[in-house]
Image 1: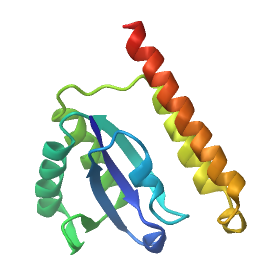
Image 2: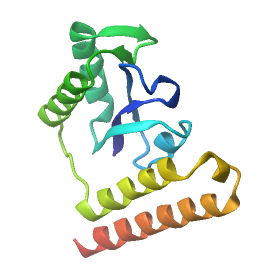
Image 3: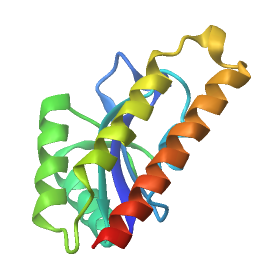
Length: 147
């Protein structure tokens, strides 16, 4: 299982430019690697993350302006978000995540985005993130063994 995501990297905030992407890891490690201030519009978990990303790129190229690489597009945020969600939900197979895990994952992202730049070098922030990730893993393991 991996993730498919739609973000607006920090350096593009205030523009109408966005990035789609995927990661083979079903953790938030990839999302957290972006700079502070990055806007996360959507994170979706799927076994078919790579296939879905290819479809996203193909469809985005038809409707939006490609601005860099293969994954950076320019367009109206509402239209980009709507197409992203439609494609993800129409093309998934084995799409699943425990709602409690998704909630925790979203909370980690909110924490990261709300911590000010002054906290960037603070070891406490890193400890909090590691603690939250550990809780996510424990919760996932408990959910898996319960089924």
